[in-house]
Image (cartoon, rainbow, N blue to C red):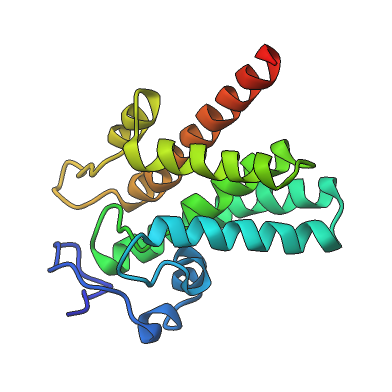
Length: 185
């Protein structure tokens, strides 16, 4: 069942399809160019897609240019996540993976150049913080979850920001652990 994109009342959850993916540019971005479509572990698949996309960008772009891509991806992602969540009528659908994509790009941008082991550790730590949501990540996840305005309608822009925010905190925690590990050794 697909939600009515213009409705402000929640509809039954649905799995996005290829048709939904290509129905709006925001869907394509928010669903990680299709990496958020798998039924199992869409966040992990989205993070793997982010890793591959980053390695491709690294081949063709300077570190500064990648930083600009990441910076531009944040407001674009906020818009895409807001629109897609509103169209799906779910505050934080698991199939929206742009939050994992941008957050993991930040991790890789800071960690690289690093070998495969460093990248695997970064991937494992990021997935841990994103999935388990310990401490500050759990706080960030709850901070923007669903907020209705005074008239009872969903504040979709807050939901869209919340989708990104907890993953940015997960990226920060990942980088903090990596920095502490590097400092200790």
